[in-house]
Length: 283
Ligand SMILES: C[S@@+](CC[C@H](N)C(=O)[O-])C[C@H]1O[C@@H](n2cnc3c(N)ncnc32)[C@H](O)[C@@H]1O
Image 1 (cartoon, rainbow, N blue to C red):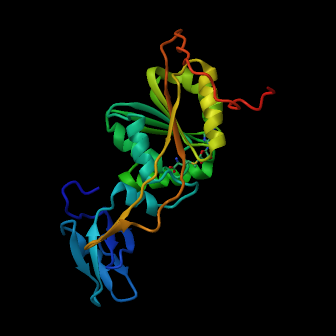
Image 2: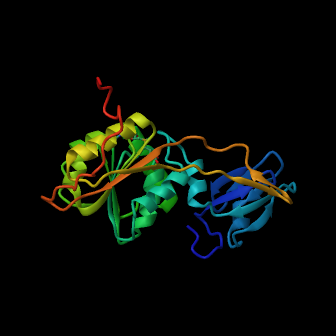
Image 3: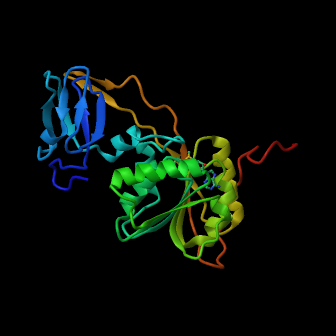
């Protein structure tokens, strides 16, 4: 990673053409990057400031930056569906992933969310990731090493089902992105310290319902809260300022809750369930 805004060997560079199309590669001394109209010599990029305009031998121009995390994640090889940058940003905010936090994460998939978690906990924190599938774990490992230049010392990746692992440590946060997070609520209650945050990212309302009910039934968690994040980009050209016509329609829901103190019962919410909330009842 470039620390000071100047490209060096080993940096990932992102080139944007005038139409906004992105290209990305790692700067490697002695190499060339070829296009349909000429090439760029990697050595010529070393030492240039980010935000430079670079040109191929045939005059094709590109703007050069180190990719932002969101750009990197969207371009990296995927095994499983990634958490989109808008949701990763919300997860870090809603689950309050702070520098120094000890985070347990499952599944890892392609490692997109793992990158946001590692960035948020910083060097004083740690991320323990668990992924059921070896092939996805391998893909995530490669993506994370590629991003940081090496496997981070404060990151551990285990292969298996998270609810079947035996944990010896406590965690400040449990973050789940998987098909059945409700199966992991008892495990989360076991490993979370008092006040710790459970957060699950799920794609469907049925998963959301199952997770909410599991958290309530478990008895160790506060009343869960849920949300979805809808982000609409805007187009601006002079006075033609309007929402963009295309947007990401649906990704997923967040549901989060906090671990109560040991032995303390959660205060029941004084609210009557809506009619039909728990199935159809005869009048
Ligand atoms: C949608 S992907 C995760 C994507 C990831 N968050 C990212 O941003 O790249 C869901 C992953 O959860 C894994 N998985 C499902 N159930 C699991 C479990 N009980 N324990 C560990 N991993 C699990 C799947 O193999 C899959 O790779």
